[in-house]
Length: 164
Image 1 (cartoon, one colour):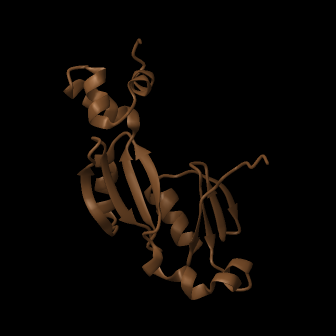
Image 2 (image 1 turned 180 degrees about the vertical axis):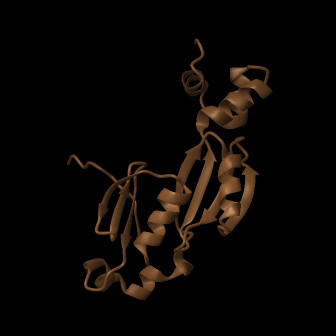
Image 3 (image 1 turned 90 degrees about the horizontal axis):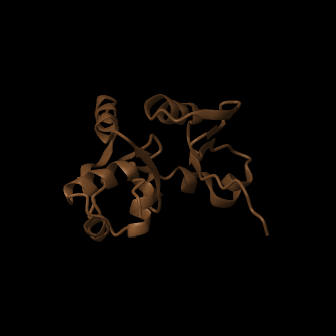
């Protein structure tokens, strides 16, 4: 079996509202917009408006799909080179936060928040960004960086483009 093109899909109540949130606020790039009802983003996410008569709606039930009570079973994860800019934009737009910027146990700074349908989203510092910071904090010691970030030394050398 040769499966291809895995795209996480969020079922949403209002695709135009979600388009504005993901493309307008978060800056994702729209690669396909099917009548304003189904939107695919270059970054690997799609939103599909819940529609009566659709097999998914019929099988799962519209109220189950629309329930914002079932939102924390998964999260969408994005990365950024500047989490402080993301944080500022979220606050300026009164986006509901799960938590403020937090430094995870492995050293990456993250923020988690909800989209208009209550889906949980995480934005974290890009791996090279936080690895470089920790590498410098650890006196440019790969072994200490690996211990602190739980990443293999070879991966750190590769990501930071260090000589072996």
